[in-house]
Amino acid sequence: MSEDQLPPKMQRFLKDIDTGRAYSAPALQKKRANVSSALRCLAETAQLNGLLVILNAETAGAMIKRLQTANWSSSTISGFKTLLRHYAYETGEGEDWALSSGASDRRPVELVLRASHWAPYRAVLPMLLEGGIGDREIRLADRWLRHRNQVTHLSLDHAMTFHADPGNLRGLAAFMTAIDPGNPDTLILQAAQRKRRSTAKGVKHKPAYGELPEPFLSQMKVISRKPKELGGLSTARIKVMGCAIRRLIRAAKQRGLKPELTMETATAFAEDLVSDDLKTISAAGHCEFLGYFAKRAGYPAEIGEELLETHWSLKAEARTDLKHKEIKLAKVPIDLVDLAKTASEILDQAPFQEDIRNRRRDYTLAGAIALLCKLQIRAKDLREGKIGKEFSRDSEGWSVDLKTSKTGTYITGRLADCLTPFLDAVLLMDTDPAYLWKIYDQRVGTALFANPARDWQCYEREWLRRNMTERTGHSAHIVRTLIYDYVTLDAELDAKVAQALVGHAHATSKQFYEVNADRYRRMAALMGLAAIEKALPG
Image (cartoon, rainbow, N blue to C red; front, side, top):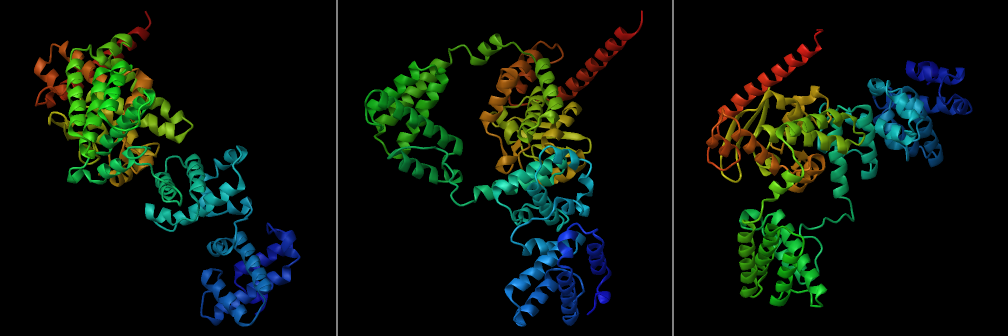
């Protein structure tokens, strides 16, 4: 076969080598005859096998098999493959084969960025390249885009088949977020990175009860083995039991006793709890945790009974203490307006957080504070509420339909319109609003206030407490007290409605939300009119 019989694209590539227009023309001109021979061999093989005369995995494989059958040397075959890869990188034809057949990806970035899938990002690429993005990152992102484009809708399973180690996937996710921040595919890519890292060899998952010496370790293994559905303990309960055991060990060591559970060490444990700077109710809780551990682990009955007796005694004493939230409010005064403003400020500033984890934290925190200001539920109900069940979205906004965890009160109805941008931001988490319904459908059945780093499981109690305290000086529980105080001063609402809103009754008033929504809208309108009036001359 002569060069004139080659397909137009192959002929054009040879001419570009001759004229110096090809990217690697200087190197390829020295091997011009070999390039021609490789292309003609590929074309002939394709024709002999009844294949399309193009470079792809099928035609390249047939050519290599033909040469091996003819006893060509491995070095010559390797040389042909290298030249065909040059052709693939220059023309884009057979590039998937070229990438999969090479030991490493060494494509010039200038050729990589010619691909059509880079077109949407070319405006931002110069800035990223100036900022120090390396060739390896560009090549990796290119391979990912090719892999992504193999399917119409990206799934976690497809993302998991992409060949890259967890460390590279993390950098890739950060790069794709930088060039395409609103694309929900980035969330799936990050999920693939976390899953691959968690299943990597050598990665050990710490048990909920943490590190413990024997015999406590073996005992906690047995206790935690029973599923919660069959009467076992929750992960949270197992975790606090581990904390109580470590306190016991510390108390024993401080007194020169053996680190074991006896009546003597249990007494030392209780004495330390009382003398430490702990709230009385917290000390009561630790005694309860260790007491139930003693019962489940088979220790003498009197040890568990004594610890639980101490628990009930401390709990009764705690009822006479000045409530911690009252002390906190006295030290750090705050009202509902302050909290609402804080939520708005956090939401406004979230897009400017450089770290994606901080952005997502702020979107979630802003939504949580805003919802707590308008919906009088406990933090547990907020954290565990699922999309499509407790919290639902339609074309008009968000609705709630939940049964409170403590009193069993049913709260149903449409949430105030002012909450829509907050809850949408929690759902989207830095994704373009155009993908709202796609993300909503994907997330149905998962917690609204969920951690993407934990496969959309709800955030732990400590997460909301810590982040709210850092921003406002108070935890979520204080908001319920503020609403109770605020509503009782409102002549439009009676005490029963106020009590229901903070969970001290067994009914809740849907009318409250409607009345308050109208009132807040009137207040906002009056404030707007006042501002306009002040701005008028004279």
